Length: 121
Image (tube, rainbow, N blue to C red; front, side):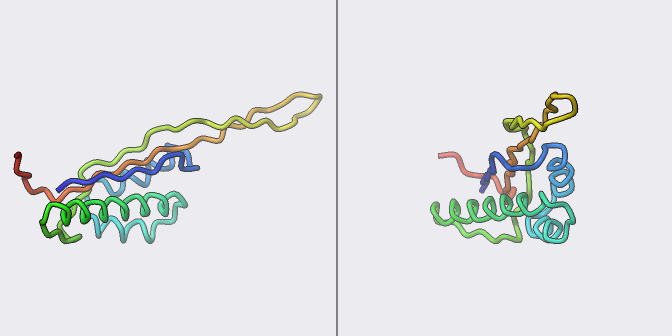
């Protein structure tokens, strides 16, 4: 059973979010959840929420098809961070000039799977 969760327009730069996502890629879901709980980066909380959602999406899909699923069996099979839209702000500078400030956003996507072959109907 495979499930996906996505958080869009997260107010963190993609570069910072990728550092956190690279730490959990390929790990078991519960182990990654613990890593994210104690990670010092602020974006780790957003990634943890996405992982939590993906785990429960997998459980819901399994229950919908009449299967049983344990969180212990889930593995993060894919994880990536895309760049979202950049908000542009201006700050006054010397001699009547304006300095541009770029507030970047991210789209965080996680895919979890129990690595069992699904039957094709």
